[in-house]
Amino acid sequence: MARKRKIPMRKDIVTGEMKPKKELVRIVKNKENEVSLDPTGKKAGRGAYICLNVDVAKKAQTERTFDKVFETKIPDEFYEELVKYVDHQAARRELFGNEK
Image (tube, rainbow, N blue to C red):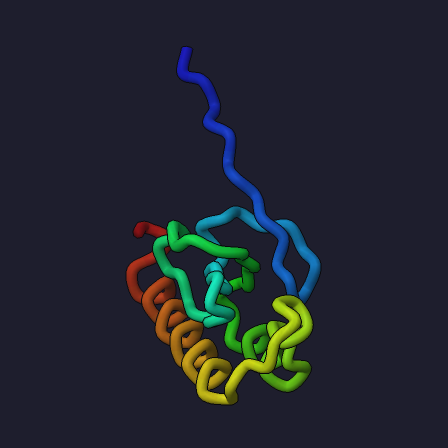
């Protein structure tokens, strides 16, 4: 009999919902206080997750969620890049399904 695999769950920092890790993207702050996208989930530093939903990414942009989470001033370009990335990934999921 095949065992059911455990699905790793993470909390979306904007909505507060627990979701499977594959449905989220990690944002990481390294020791130099640089904040960046971490699509692989393996970069060193403190991470926070956001779901692959454009509306949630835009909400994070308007509320400047990651400024508060990482306690640092983050440039507007980062939020614009985040919205573009989430939009792109959402479109990919629509086209190709949930396979990665």
